[in-house]
Length: 203
Image (cartoon, rainbow, N blue to C red):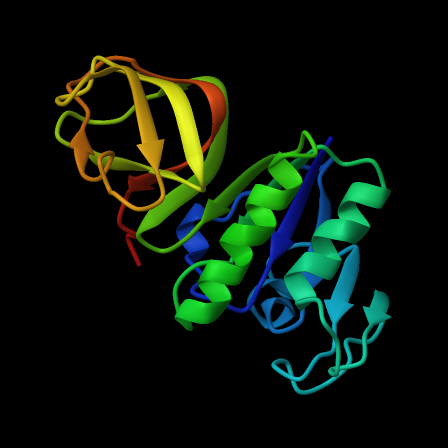
């Protein structure tokens, strides 16, 4: 089951896509982006970014003095409700500290078995373990970054292939690869990597 979460980072409306069966959570200021685009099932946050409490929908309001970010609390709520796929908009761009916090959240929940994809204005980031097929136009760039250490990393049908490589979080070996056309396969046999695919927002 998929949950759509929308934060208050950079938002690209032409990438925003919701299916009828999706559960939609607006995370604080993200409500302003989507209140006129789709039905919002739940709003979560302390609402300091938004500046007001949404009316007419279910809300979970948190004290602004807290250890957890609004996005983390929204992830936790979606996870408690049984959702195992999170597609997240407005989690990248803007403040760098918020972007890094959202990536940390993605990693934490990926280790719990959740499929997490963060969609920004100029890239898509997702946590990968096991095998992943990526597609795109020839020359489109992508990068892999280790959260700590990832072993048995393979890149097949990329401009710069890898075979049984080890990626660590102190050296960017996986930065700036390119698609050759056709399917490109990423495999991570031990650990997790952050896959970033660059794709520009049209508006």
